[in-house]
Amino acid sequence: MDTRVFLIGGAPGAGKSTLGTALAARLGIGSLTIDDLVTAVQAVTTPETHPGLHLMWKTSHLDYFTHSSTDKLKADAVRQHEATWPFIERVIRKHALEGAPIVIDGWHLWPGRVSQLQLENVWAGWIIVAPSVLEGRERKNVEWLQGSSDPERMFGNFMSRSLWFNSLMEEQANELQMNILSQHGKTSVDELCEMILENQVG
Image (cartoon, rainbow, N blue to C red; front, top):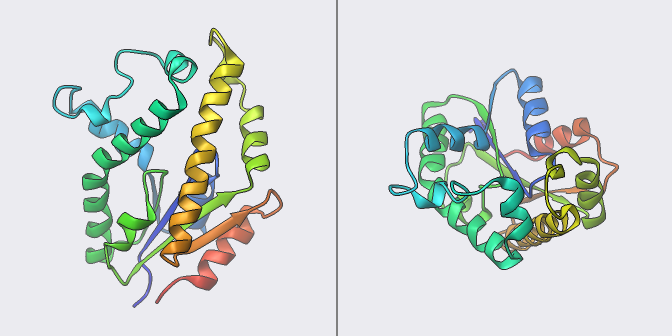
């Protein structure tokens, strides 16, 4: 069966959306970034009905990443991803079962959950980035730090969560023998697209 749905996971800053957009353009199909889907669902839910989707509703992202402990950031990530999975799964299944091709990217995709879908026409892979490369990318993204009372602390907290997640996804994908797209800083987007197309199921 030909692949109809491509899933691209990985830590924040891994390049998921860039790759997803490029792959969709190459294939001539649509693409969806899960962050946009989460934003839409947040608009029709509340912190009372769906607390896992509104973790920062009382604070700004600056205060959240500056003053939250790394353990809290990790726990909140798990909580949010658990809350988002039901509607993400529904979208994946809809496109897979209806034969509507799409590329979906987001750090909400976990190997264990995706493997349980058991859909033959879904290809999934995780971009695993060398830690130094991931940190270097975020160092260049200085705008989101502006306004923090302690930019270095904010950066450190954010990176600790990202590096934890990067390692976790690599570990889980390896355990489940799922696809890993290794990025050591020298692999181009076009090369990553080729890796996916050469290794897709179908």
